Length: 88
Image 1 (cartoon, rainbow, N blue to C red):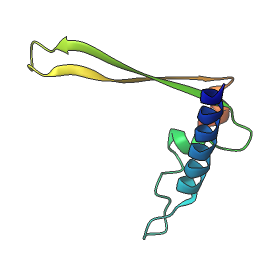
Image 2 (image 1 turned 45 degrees about the horizontal axis):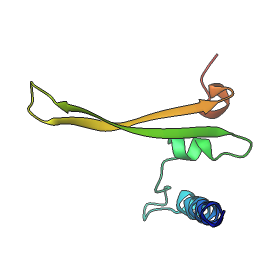
Image 3 (image 1 turned 60 degrees about the vertical axis):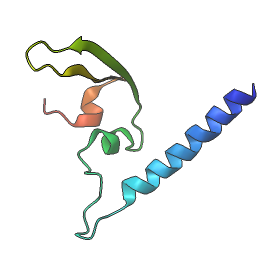
């Protein structure tokens, strides 16, 4: 039970920090995180967007000899048009 309380507290602190970062502006007066980014769009009032990341690795790429790995993001939202303002 204590672990859950700690997780909730950390989550709230991270959300508060994110809100501060979203309003922070650079020397040029523009937001540090572009208003067109998914992070900004997901935090508009009235928007609910659930995101989940998954890391993957697929061994060594035979062509490049490099390790093939990365992150895959999945999001769930009721209507993507309300977040991304897609034209009809």
